[in-house]
Image (cartoon, rainbow, N blue to C red; front, side):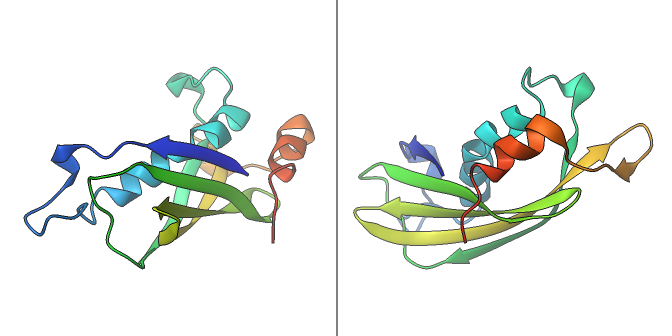
Amino acid sequence: MFTYTITPRVADTDALGHINNTVLPCWFEEARTPLFRILNPKMDFAAWNLIMARMEVDYLKQIFFHSEVEVKTWICRMGNSSFDVMQELWQDGAVCARSKSILVHFDFKTQKSVPIQGAMRDDLLAHLQE
């Protein structure tokens, strides 16, 4: 499991005084960076090999500007060329949001998914949790 801490910005809030719902997918993406590095260690966009097929977000509690947010990230399913990522946003000891994403190992030249193999697969499996 990866953990990542986010300090909410004033710009992340909305007229209702809480963190705007459109901000959370960006936070989830930022916290997936360690997974991106497993698939593309140099973070080279010319060699990018990952696409998102789906993302779900459940908003459980309001998140506020006043304190940091911890994002927990882990893999919950490993397929041949895709994997599912679960994430939770925590603030003040409570889960405030959950996300499930399906990421696909992808070859942009052929426009097809490709198997995840070798060390890349092993590194991802190290973060597999039910």
